[in-house]
Image 1: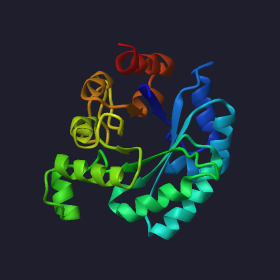
Image 2 (image 1 turned 60 degrees about the vertical axis):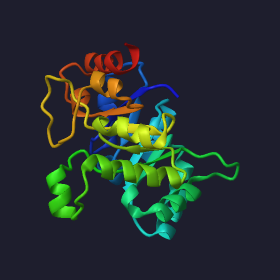
Image 3 (image 1 turned 30 degrees about the vertical axis):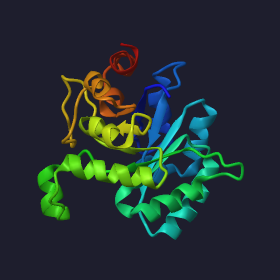
Length: 233
């Protein structure tokens, strides 16, 4: 499976999303639909983007009791998304239940990945707010190991943690990494960040890039720069 750049379409309407995507011309990049857009537009936004030819990462970060996650995934499995996710902190049993809910009658399913620690979380916040005293890299690697045990395809983590995750879970276990910015961009509300080129060097399989592309003066140029740095070099 090759590397790819996923554009985070963190907009609040289908109109705004289409307005942005039309700037990219005939290009049909992999896109992420998060909570903001999905809650505003519902399943129709997924169907619309799939009809346009986009691969879709549905980023809803499910986290509930196993039965609820299983039933929610049964609903989401009918949307034709290419990737979706749960929170690894929901336990191995919850992740297994989500995976089972995603499977179609023929056994096919989208990729399922688990969020380890959000890239806005610092070591200090993890310790003070969540009462987790272990080192961030160790926590992320342990959550990734649990996701692998549950049968998932990979995790969401910072690019900085990709080497450790691959070391624990193997090279074929996917690392999907937000927290990616160009060197000359503001890092916004992210804490554990790096550039597309550095993410590639660290072994990320997918990078998720939002404002560096969506808020750029020239989104086409910004997207092409991401692809050049992360995929083509």
